[in-house]
Image (cartoon, rainbow, N blue to C red; front, side):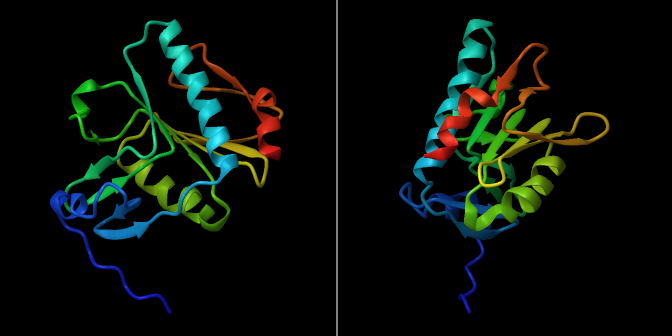
Length: 185
């Protein structure tokens, strides 16, 4: 049986872990993270490129970020996450170290050993702390789950052969067929 992890109650305690430690904190409970796989990184790179390229071509004011970049969702109890990919449109949430508050858009790429974190735990936190749109990219199941939380919550699953609309933008679509060869890495 694993030993219980110490509670982290302040941002100072979290920062004292050091920059080389990959961890998230959910209601004060620390959760250490493993390094991502090669396939995870390939998918992350391609999706980040599509999103960043779109924003640049539109001269948009939003910014894309990728893990490891802290998002502090709550001070008490302390909740800090490191989404794989995020879009932040409110520059006032950025303090040079982290995003303080919910990003507008988040993508998590499922790791085989902790899929419940993305499908259950992070879905709960992202929805309840104000993320507008949350995607779960699951290469193992070959599906993309889009959770859109504006007004009535909507959750739709798409196969990897689909072209999927990014709902926070009027004209941004991601063609997963162009990314799918990476899922065989």
